[in-house]
Image 1 (cartoon, rainbow, N blue to C red):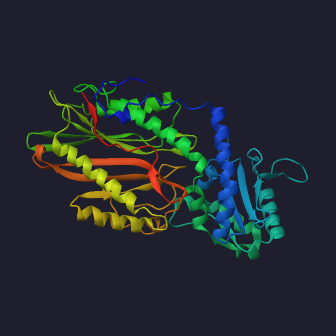
Image 2: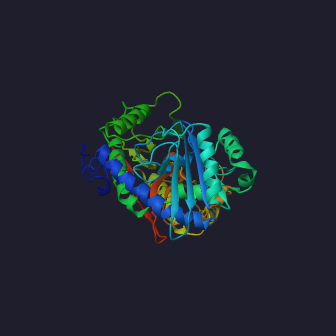
Image 3: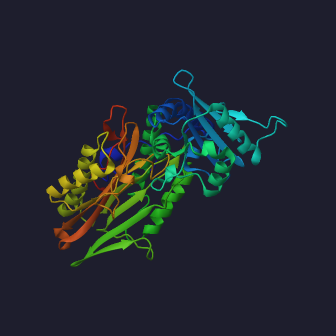
Length: 442
């Protein structure tokens, strides 16, 4: 890794380059172990918690249920023609039966059914016929299907698949169908403790890449544009074997005389100048995990060694907001309850700010309780009414808006975002660490 000149950043951001990702083959072994843990530990407990005897998930190739990719091996990239997974709870002693009607066994995690007459893979009507037979034989009292008006992760059964399923299983079995929104939502949301160290390693890469981008390796004042930064990040992700789930975002804020400008990247490319305050939103994906981070940088003027005091205070306001949100994130509270309590404390301190934190994990905007949206500070019905659970991950995302005396009291936006874990004990902590000081660009 390019080493930054001493004094540009705090010591926390000057660590040696993180270790490279293991080979794809080694990653797959690790991911397969996570999948086994989730199917063997998490799924049975959730089915019993929600009173579900059988869970049916039907997906067609390239039109997969969102939960599909949390149920399959890392070498599975799409449903096989049609894949129907059936989970049947045989009780605490025998455990949950995992059946695949179409597709493979996922390295032995599913029992695969073939056409009994030909031995070939199930297809079309033969899949629905066998599903009816399985249901008739096992006689579940409640069959969960993924339909929800509130949660995308619980709404993966397409209209076409639902129509065929309901027709195939018959009127008596149709009466047993239930919408178990929490089952799919919690299965996608819950992590196993074994995943934590890998996620922490990914965050090491995130911080290392951000330290480099907020340096003269990437940004040369008066020359580099905001779009140069965005595409450097995209290219760096690819070079390191990472993917991305959103285009990196950058905001340039600057003061000219008595007027402050906030320049957005969807306009013409903006040349970064001395005295600019930079906000950067960046995430990567690897091993079917997503990160989401926002850091702030300052381009030093000639003769400066630090940002003006007013700008420093603005960063402190956002850090106080992060502390308050995390203090209120206790297991059993809903996202809306966390939001209301946090905003009350934030406003009592005289800070103007907005909270929009969210779960993260298998997806960047993950399954679980949302804690505000930038334009919904009064709470988010439905999505914000979900309770916080142990063994879940969150992006603590928010922003403050602070008048800057050195800018004629024009407002400075300071957006911060850092990923955190709610552990098995219910305590929340940063996955790695948060930004404590501005990144400084000379």
